[in-house]
Amino acid sequence: MNLDFSQIVPYIPFMLKGIGATLKFVSISILVGFILGTILALCKITNKPVLKWFAAAYTSIFRGTPLILQLMIIYFAIPQLTGYDIDGFLAAILAFGLNSAAYVSEIIRAGIMAVDHGQTEAAEALGIPYKPMMLNIILPQAIKNILPALMNEFITLTKESAIVSTIGYLDLMRRAQIVGADLYRNFEPLLVAGLIYWIMVVILTKIGSMVERRMRYSD
Amino acid sequence: MIKVNNISKTFGKNEVLKNISTSINQGEVVAVIGPSGSGKSTFLRCINLLETPSAGEIWIKDTEITNPKTNKQMVRQKIGMVFQHFHLFPHMTVLENITYAPQKVNKLSKENAEKIAKNLLSKVGLLDKMDSYPNQLSGGQKQRVAIARALAMEPEIMLFDEPTSALDPEMVKEVLDVMKDLANTGMTMIIVTHEMNFAREVANRILFLDEGVLLEEQIPAIFFNQPSTVRAQEFLAKVL
Picture 1 (spheres, rainbow over the protein chains, first blue to last red):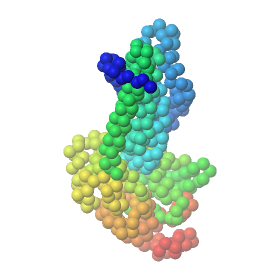
Picture 2 (picture 1 turned 180 degrees about the horizontal axis):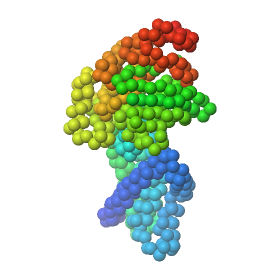
Picture 3 (picture 1 turned 90 degrees about the vertical axis):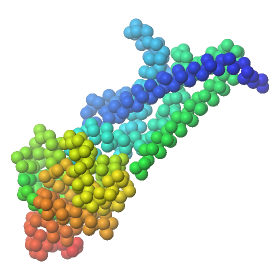
Picture 4 (picture 1 turned 30 degrees about the vertical axis):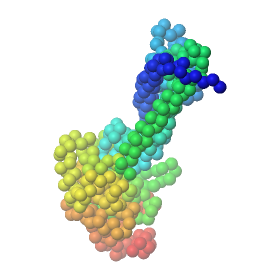
């Protein structure tokens, strides 16, 4: 055992920059995934066959293939097809956002289905149109119930984000690898990266339970 | 005001309503009674199109609401409904429950909607609960809020679907009293109920349904004393 953390001290600022890089695309991906996932969930519960079919096919494809493959297709294969040279940041947001949407849509769909049908009937009986009914009456109740599952998805996304290191995006993981290659020592930088990921997830979990507590006020 | 012409409703092979016709005048209070599974609730739910009749027509004033071209939302805005299980919005306060639809649908300002809501809450005796959430209320209080919520849309007709069936016995009266007051204001009301005394006292007319058929249509004094069908006699013998 010869662990020597002193050697990576000069690299710490370089690694810490990875936190920002990771957080930036993860937070945008979560947002994209959540919005798109909500729209897909609404498609799944309509009675319009085309939308239903589209949402089901979308989920099947994005859940049925590896995330790393989707990332590679977006980053390496699409430029070959279109000639558009996509940058790593955009590719990462697209891959993670589109992939997360598939999972989020299933979570939200389950959440909507779990809301008492009487809520829909009460809203309908009051003459409330579909859109405000969904937005202000059904979804708030659904999201309250599925918050733990959503948090789980966001945590998974945060950790899986390390995959972007494979397309050369300078996230936390990639930076740890670079430091490791520079020093010929891998254990220390990877340990530091691991610690940072863990702290990020702990903070995310804390935020989650805080939001959950705030949403329980009406219980 | 309401004309029901030969409506039927089938769920798959199950015929829940069979050829029901009746008409209800403005200001009339009609109680719909009958054994469970007789189609009373389905009949009521057809009137605000929560169920679409499989056949037949329903007219409200000059509008055939069963016409597929009729705007359901427009119809429902003029018909209030109170459910057995209240269906208050649990994430909204009592005041928000009542003001939401008037603001969203009737485009009232927040101030106006709240003024109407507070007025209704004081009528149902719950002004002090306006900032509470539904699960902080008792069943009777929830149902009174639900009535206020429906009334805030200024409906011309009120539908009640077994409004006291989910309540503890000691809370039934407070809800019935509110309904009685409402009947005295001249509101057109259709009430599906198991409260025979209430029906006898408040209703102008009784509709007796059995197995989807409108068996009797009679004023309470006659229906409760001399029901003409055997089925109604049996039913009343059990419940009275």
